[in-house]
Image (cartoon, rainbow, N blue to C red; front, top):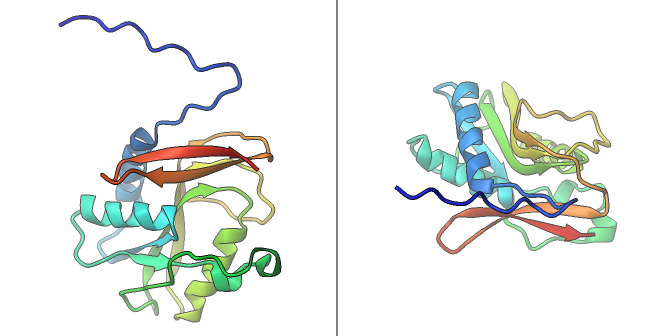
Length: 176
């Protein structure tokens, strides 16, 4: 076995996040959070991708739910109706134990919107939140029950999960 040279260190100020490694941490965290009756619902789009893959990797029957924040955004007038997925919940929300999944938790506004959307479908017994990355910067009192990583980014940057055609996860960092 030949030793590999160490990877070059990231440039000063750059962010290197291994989305696949963080997914492994998220999988471990979700295993510890969920009970047999827990239903998964991902926030469109990154959270829905996570929920879909977790559903498969956990060997759960059926499909994970998808929650859209589009109709409950408090900035709807500025953003308009996004071309994201529509809410689809293939389980009864009333009395359910629901684990909501998202790729990046930032201000808390998207989580607030999807909670409003979820309650349009019924009254769950419990709702918890698991995220791949918590980047701080909260504007609302929202906290994840599990975060695979916590990072600090300037408000001028956005972080989003992306995936390849083969389904591998990676992050996109953009200037806002």
